Image (cartoon, rainbow, N blue to C red; front, side, top):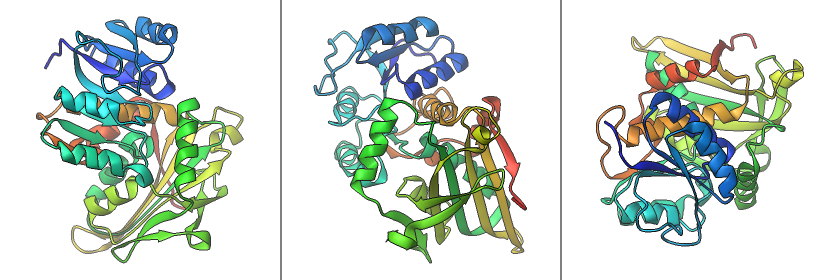
Length: 336
């Protein structure tokens, strides 16, 4: 399906937005893109590099984003915090698919309420997961071998030098200010934990153990509900990554442990790392691009109006294939 109207990427000149636009351009060379940012010159540079793209400035304080009526779009992507939800309103008023990545579990309620109030207006993809849903999709691909999953443990290492840019830093400060508690699922019950109960050790791929803690991320309910696993934990450690310890660039690494039974009822467990040597940016960009591709009907059936999450729309096997294409690797964690 070709689109004459462009995808409006709010924050399109930032790290995640620009990288996602580049992925979309590679996959769909004729897809029109609109790079929206506060600095028009910077947005224009990104648009010029992409080709078949335009640059605009937007005002996130206005319900029409400060755009003239003749601006036509096929979808709206919030690659920056949509603080007043004006990007969502702009999309709903025009019946456009909408994707967001910056509302954490602790501040997602206004977005959910706004989306639910006008659920029939257009599809909304809530992708404020780790790397815009990529980790959830990797876990679900690994889970295919299981008949039942009892426990999911995810441990992410975020290199302190891999901040993701000013917008990502602001998102992190906002989310940390909301709560220091973490969310886990224990024996089927979603439970808030704090203090020692929230602390966790996260094992890096080279065996280094980093102090971390359980965090309130959308990945946790997505994984728990998608798999039915009664015990789920998502922990994060901030520190030096294995890549930087080798004298290379800051890498990103996520350890994924699954326990349960196979399709015959025999006990089964698996432990693997998802690694990208260039840090979080490529994977976050991929998550956004996968969501946009799906929302526009460029892959798969048309998406119905309503609120969606990445695992409800995107095939995990396809996502893993795309991860490998952009340089991600999967490493067996046994013995590490």
